[in-house]
Image (cartoon, rainbow, N blue to C red; front, side):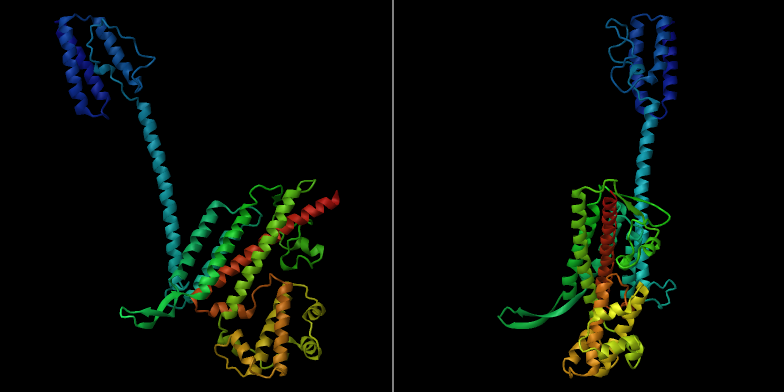
Amino acid sequence: MGSRGIKKKGSFQMDRISNSEESYDVGSYYRNSQSSSSSSVDQSDQSPVTEAAATRLSMKSENSFCRTSSDVSAFSEPTDDNSSYSETPSPLYWPMKSPKSHVLSRLGMQQHKDVLDDETETEDFELEMMKERFSKLLLGQDMSGSGKGVSTAVAISNSITNLYASIFGPHLRLEPLHTDKKSMWKREMSCFLSICDYIVEFVPTIQELQDGTALEVMASSPRSDICISLPALKKLDALLLDILDSFAETEFWYEEQGSRSEKSTRSGSFRRILPAPQRKEEKWWLPVPCVPSNGLSEESRKHLRNKRDCANQIHKAAKALNNSILSEMEIPDSYISSLPKTGKTIVGDTVYRYMCTSDKFIPDLLLNHLNLSSEHEALELADKIEASMYTWRRKACSIPHSKSSWDIMKDFMSDTDRTDKNIVLAERAESLLFCLKQRYPELAQTSLDTSKIQHNRDVGKAILESYSRVLEGLAFNIVAWIEDVMFVDKTMQSNQ
């Protein structure tokens, strides 16, 4: 009777455990529990077990869910070697996982899943952006798909310009570029520049046959202008990013203000010629650099001067490359056909009289006499001078309007009479335009340059021109930012 009572109570406890552990492997657990139960019952037949022992067994089985997975727990009851229980541990005392551990495990898996989902969403977003830009390139930025879009060269040029505006447009301080924006700039530019890997030209090469016969064949080779200019532009790009990274820890800082501070001189090309009241109102949205009350340290000033000189050299190199690329582009027929018949009507009586009557033409004196006060006036004068220059060259050389570039015109002029009045005026106009661009280095592109870019069909030149143009702008901004900080430091020293 006692044995049957123990068997019934043991089976009742096993039913409670099996119902509570539905999430585990029921089959294996049931087989192990059956073998352990039979062993326990056999021993119970040999040694009598009281009702108190069965009650203690039931209490231990209920508390067994709070056990950890460790073999020994501080909350476990000590076992006696002379105990009537079997040497094989009862399933009631097997280490079981706590429901809390399962909850934490599921929580960790959910967090890991969330991280993977975020990474997947980021990759999907970047992929969709690439698809969108690739589609715009193929459609020529004409979303209607009717074939009225711009050429591939113009689409790529606009894409590089827009990329620069989105990455460096909000960046108005002398500090490192954000990691995400830097990686985006490198990744997107790598895609655009990879097009140049497939632009080739055919060059004659000597190929020897097996019998020793030498044949001249045409072999494909990377285009010479891309091989020369593209590595240089990549190097300038890396140097500019290194300059920004060098200002990670600085002694100066920036403050956002509603209007420009009187201590700042950021004013584009005219920062050295505009009076102080005009400087304060121009580009008021830019942050104002600030320095300590005792000024910057000598080491910081040396670092600023070094980086300014480096950025200035990069600006000159990028500008020279851009001018060289633009000069090699063909002049559109629409620009030539829009030129007036005489150059005098373009430049005006004052400039024309000075260019004709002077025995020794000095461009700086003419620019000082004109007293330009704004960038708009300087750009308007540059357009007039450039248009008059081509008008006089066309009259001197009698060149047809179609496909005439600057270099081709010079070749024609070398065979003409150097005493011709039109040739003399064209040369003076060229020197005046060069002096004007040197005086105002951040002068916007002239009408001829804009027309060349819009009508260009050469993809390689479009990439080189737009890449050099954005690097030129970035280099100039870095120089201006450094000069702003140096001016504030100099002002702080003079006030002490």
